[in-house]
Length: 470
Ligand code: NAD
Ligand code: UDX
Image (cartoon, rainbow, N blue to C red; front, side, top):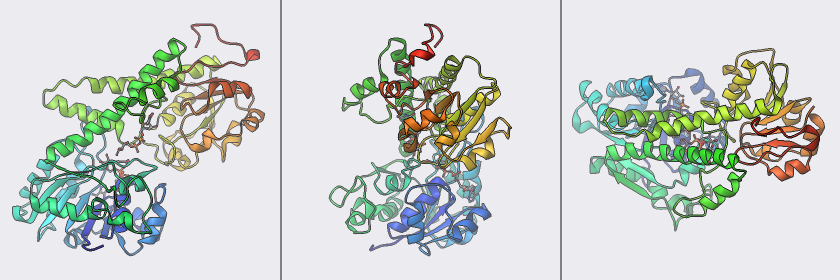
């Protein structure tokens, strides 16, 4: 590492903490700030507050290289680049709530005494860059002492570290050459490829001969790239889900259809998995925020509303499948496999699985839930109820169940010992919201199997519902 940069990352959540660990891995000096004292204490003591592959190892490796603090002012003063990675949740009328960003910027302003680059890492609507400028001016920060740069983050939870170190692209929206140059210095190990040449580099798609691509744009373009990327991915998911519903209506198979579509290189195979719909802390709020931006500018972008509506309907359709398979729900015992919004994360924000569990409980069912990582977080949001229990594993959850519901695409749920599952349950019925199994295999293993966008398969003795029921 030739030219380390002093970096301050504000926010130690899924993005801030990953960015801090990865910047240290790239050779920079990092101060990571959070106003959650308990979280900072945990991190200082070597604890890792989120479930993310490679994160514990990287934080242990760079103990001392990343320092955790609640002292935002001190961290700003000691740094050349200040990355803002606080939450931007959904606010009123779909707009992003930027109050955390504004609070941080106001505090940063009091501590700028020499040139700093303020970097928007949080996902923000177009013109946030402009607003940050204005806030800094209003607080009396001299114009020559700062630039504001947009540098959206594209990592996915569950694969965040590898996504960060092996990005498809790095986007930087910078208005001045001085700030663009500092961003070039920060990302040089990935863009120049020196990181990948190190024997200790975490392996991924990129290498010293195929390093990361850096795209420099205006701030507005960079901000729009982030919203447009998330909206486009959400669009792909809603599109395949709508096709799945059509496939079901005509006895076609959505997995074959997705394979056929994905082989077209112009479409690509990614984000074509039909299921319960998208959740998480990004797609739902970012599609809403992007729509709000379009509305504010008088641009018709109702397509974004359709993406959201299809996504909502997907959960209703799944719930109706449960009803159709079980007829009535009061008194039924259901195993819920999965609570996280997707596999390999403990994040339950906007999780379709959580919503389904809530609806099952409201409908009078008894639910035994299991998730490999998200149970503690789920307990904090699901209503305490005698009808809701948590199990330590798949087979315990499935014991005496009237049906097993697969709600999250954990690898563990795709590798269930089906004979053991069949022994555990009361009735061998699996309703799979993530299409983790082949229908014929489930039929052969004695299960009635209902999934998304594929013909359901019924054990003869359980009887196939007549048309119109399912
Ligand atoms: P998060 O809620 O996990 O973390 C935010 C952190 O900021 C929290 O630890 C909170 O305590 C801290 N914070 C809030 N106000 C603060 C303040 N005034 N001073 C210091 N710390 C403060 O959020 P996240 O998932 O990391 O997302 C952060 C941003 O990144 C959002 O804009 C999100 O849309 C975007 N993003 C998220 C992902 C993702 O996969 N989670 C991916 C790309 C982009
Ligand atoms: C997303 C974006 O992918 C990432 O680039 C951005 O930075 C943050 O938001 P994340 O929310 O971590 O990342 O998860 P992602 O893997 O994109 O999945 C989002 C949701 O879509 C999950 O609920 C997932 O189950 C669902 N999904 C994803 C599908 O239903 N089908 C798919 O084909 C892909």
